[in-house]
Image 1 (cartoon, one colour):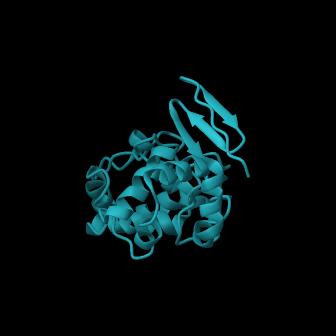
Image 2 (image 1 turned 90 degrees about the vertical axis):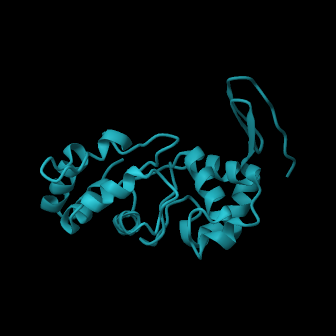
Image 3 (image 1 turned 180 degrees about the horizontal axis):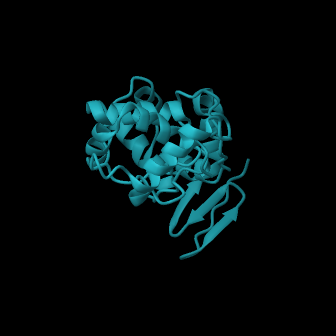
Length: 203
């Protein structure tokens, strides 16, 4: 397939397989090739991830994905699975993968336990003043959409969210915002489970 690229200052342009975001060009055709060759096994072709132990990447911020891939490659973020998958990626390929998954449609999961989800909603939006737990929404937004620096949480698998909170608490994961270590340490098992269930229902 012929790949053509355009650069238009301050504009988003699609032209064949090239996408220009601001002044940076990403190769979506190359990203699709990488996803179809390896990423889909865990994360799905559309970033939907059928397994609850692997994160859903659809709709995730491009910059955040790029950062995480770089830190898997460098070893700053520990993962026996992701380090070998990221080692051969170039910075340009990481940016292209970020743009590829960000463009995919994210979806919410239906509420499964109304009462547990209600607890999660309270914790997400208000935290717990009695334990000093801050509201998740204060950083990740009221709908869990995050920012380019902070991950989108909306629609994420509850199991994956719980696993990451446990890793922050144990300091097994320490590549990201150190605030998460304090947040995770203040969550009870019920709160952790409940907020993960609520996050999964956000769209």
